[in-house]
Length: 147
Image (tube, rainbow, N blue to C red):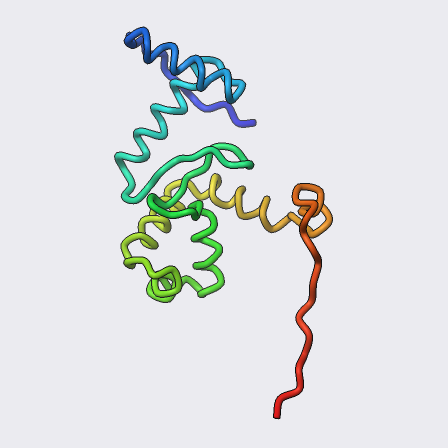
């Protein structure tokens, strides 16, 4: 893992905020210092990118398009399937173009994060999916005769 440069900053929090930070850290298995650094980074990204939110998911904390159930990487998959056509993806999702462009802007700023999530999704096969979702059923579309 590549070591990133960091700087030490000291801060004071109200007691209740410190307790909440420790609860978040414990829930994720982080130190309070790691939790505060992650939350500050997420807050900075939210202030820099439109329509951005961060949420816990089965794959960990992920960037999502605000007001939707889609992670940024999922919007990028749609863009890939629509050959990069922002307007077509926006029409498909019934979103304004600006929301799709916002996801694209974030993806361009953090390509490693988004590409890693897409690669993980692409590597999931039915066998591993069935382990996570035992109710999953494999099916194939049948050809039907017309006319």
